[in-house]
Image (cartoon, rainbow, N blue to C red; front, side):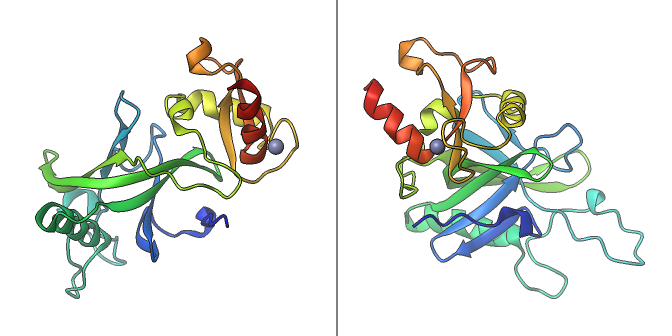
Length: 220
Ligand SMILES: [Zn+2]
């Protein structure tokens, strides 16, 4: 049921149609990350920077000083091009937007599924030196069920990365109730509707989807 990508083995950040039904992007917002990805304060909008020209051996060209390519030197379409084409198709043909699973790196080797986003727009912007692709993604209303119950994204999306990182370490990457390491997400001990806040690690814990489902049955 659960189709989790093995994110660790992915070689690149942009993976158009990694699966027949969706694409995958990996984002990292560490201060020294090579790309300027950002999440807006609304918690549901992401700007994702396209990818640079690959570095070629024996060449003096700095990929950070040349336009991000839509086509490679061999005239094949790049990941930037594939994602841009999907946006054009959506905007011109009014097809449903490309679904993109977005993973965020919270610690070395730990990738967290932020959710399924719709790829809604792209722009080519000049960053002062060269042109870069900026893709806009919005949290999709259609979040996939993981087989054991839905991940409650409206409760998890606003938790700052720093808090997630601490909680992950404290809970040792396991569900605090059953120690499962599958379908984990960050759970608010006290739901927002009952006054919970996402700002500290105190009321956030790691729960697996199964335990979360059991929990929400009790509260609601
Ligand atoms: Zn559990």
